[in-house]
Length: 82
Image (cartoon, rainbow, N blue to C red; front, side):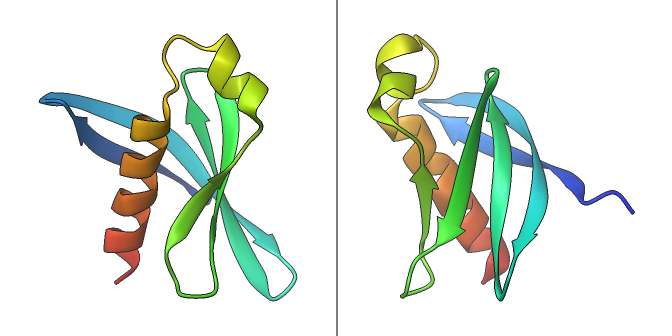
């Protein structure tokens, strides 16, 4: 079974699409998203909002991955689940 899917994101008027897959983890789940070659996990917090789980080096070392982009991906995931 393939749990892969695409996450479409509109950022600053540009359409982007990121490959993702569902990763079950005990009683919860995470979503692993390929963001321009960086593998970034998104997980729900206690209130049901999604957050990116990465280190600051990923943001510092990438010209394409930004906090704003990660927020938009998290919001897209959250809106799709509600």
